[in-house]
Length: 314
Image 1 (cartoon, rainbow, N blue to C red):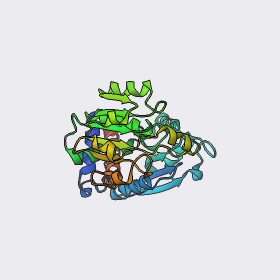
Image 2: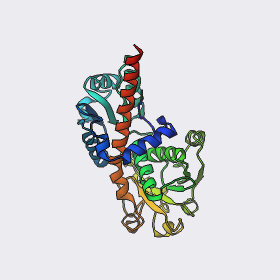
Image 3: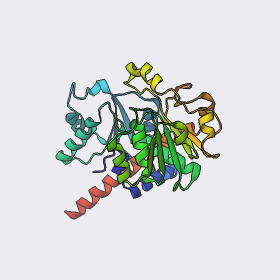
Image 4: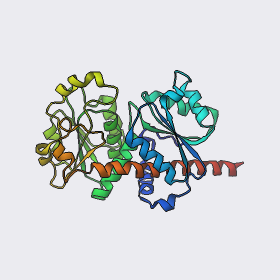
């Protein structure tokens, strides 16, 4: 089953296929979801994820059904397993934006045990944001073409966005430098996972060191959704980690800036940088839709191929 819970659920070749489909003219993908529904379960709200996914499903001829977290009440009204089995009765794909990554894992296991060929796509969890990473790689391909030997400097919290980005970058042959305050950097398991993919990664607590000569500066909010009680503590910890004009001046002359949004100008990034000529943030945001279209087309085609092969075998 072609579930997509993290970016390295794809092979390097499959990642290339998804990126290629993301750049294909919509007419070439029209009908991939014709007459089929896609469940969009949102335990956590989002502007970009909902809009990009709904429009991607529509572009493929499918029908997106937005489901608020309270409507299903995962592990409150129903177990994650029962939610998955129920939604699989109606939909070709289940996409979910959840608080706890383990719920996605349980959903995929329940469908697998039941022999139901409906893939689960992670729209965001506490551990991963693979759809964002697809858009990031797509954006960098558009900016630089071949990514081999390029360097991304990630400045900030080594969170779910960082994790998926680092894995995707490693799969695409991009070096990763990470600058985080003490206590907010990647752990040993994260680093080992990147290295297993053949990744080249450096970790530091000095933003200027990470930014030196980098092709890309990437940042995210210091305080993510669900961490609101840590705002002041995090502002103190991340002081000096703002992506501003001074930090950008240390990067390569043709370096670009990415941010997964939403942004807090004056905290993790300055207004002059995110709104400046080297920002590719809005191109990156637009690519959330294109990347999702490519991913969904790839997922349903893969399932259809397997179903056809299984049928021929009988």
